[in-house]
Length: 187
Image (cartoon, rainbow, N blue to C red):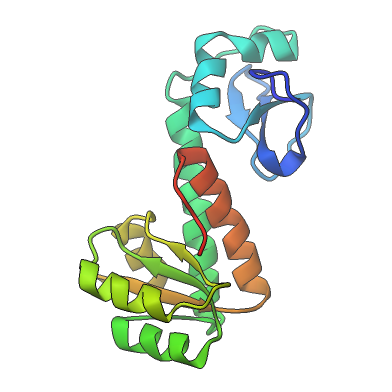
């Protein structure tokens, strides 16, 4: 149950937070940390409201310290999870970058995820989006720096991830980040 809205939701729609031994509230995004946890809907506004209204202390029934920048920390960790899974896809040979390679992968029809850096040229983005299949999810909100880091190169503008298990995991993490920040993610 979300401590802000009091709605019962599936765990995939919630973020778990626990108190550290020092009494600091920490996000438990992998849901593995010990101790009693509280849940907040996976939205930046809900985390900010929980901080503002001191709902963590009430939910945990204990004195806790909450960093006022908790919502920003959660957003950063969710973004890093998505970026690191993109890096795993690249290392596994399931991701390509660059307009030509992405275009070729799209023409073969085996792309599950298509990434565009926000600074990408509109004409290139439109051309690749037209080639994307109906099942291809498009992400244009991960910062270019994250794409650069995932591929170990500078100025990555377009990237594609082939269908498969890694694409499904990557899609899960990108969707969580998108939901948290209020971005649109999908075909």
